[in-house]
Length: 186
Image (cartoon, rainbow, N blue to C red; front, side, top):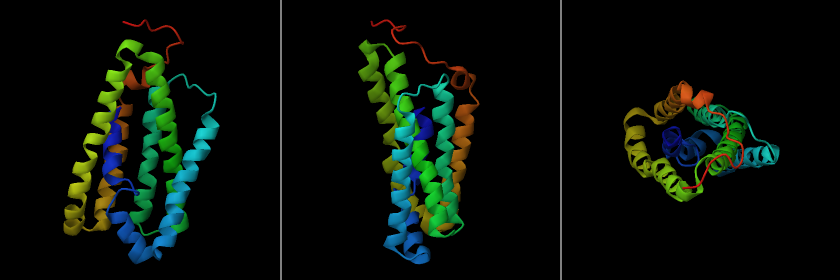
């Protein structure tokens, strides 16, 4: 699952060098950009509230599918849509992000033996975040060469493609959550 998160770290609107530039030059500056980021956070809060007590039977398919929502604000920014439209995409991305995190972490905790959970979680985090600085380092030069919109289209395309590739794996689609206590420690 980590591989599907890595592109997001490189191209997400909050992290991308292109998105604030577009907000400054085409959306009216900091206020619309603040609205977009707030919509993303509100989406995360809404998802968190809706997920309380829920346990999907196919959690890996769900957490993979919701990652596609990250493409929405990128596409909105690339098309120079109005801030409210980009905010709707960011709201959906916030829902996807919170859904991913909540379900992914609980699925790990329920299905990985406790004796190795810390190691598995640390590898997951390392691989998920290790490529972020590389993406941030190359995003500026790429945007300077191909333009902000093209960089955002690359990010959206990468997000959608990586989501579809991971979702195509039978092990992801077919994984069912193990009932509590079914995993033995050690």
